[in-house]
Length: 134
Image (cartoon, rainbow, N blue to C red; front, side, top):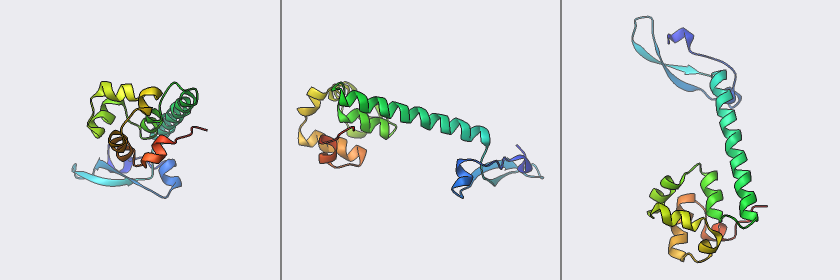
């Protein structure tokens, strides 16, 4: 895209007085950086994505309240993690992490394992163990 064609739409960035750095082609045909206040299409897509994430977080909180999932599931969703990513952060095999999503298994976790999860989520062990969804 040419330098003068870089979108300057109002969106989530412009509301916060932020700009995004984009690459564009200048009048000499060279790549250069250009500040963009946003692109409406991108803002709509990001807003929709964040809305879906919020719905998943609410669903997870409901399942924790019903005793179907452990608090690990909430913090995974909140931090936009999936099973493989969380497993790599805590240094535990995926199938163990999957087991730890079970509330009964979660209650049996050692303080050492809980510390790994708490560090990955940047919360205290107490916050992790005493999480109340509502």
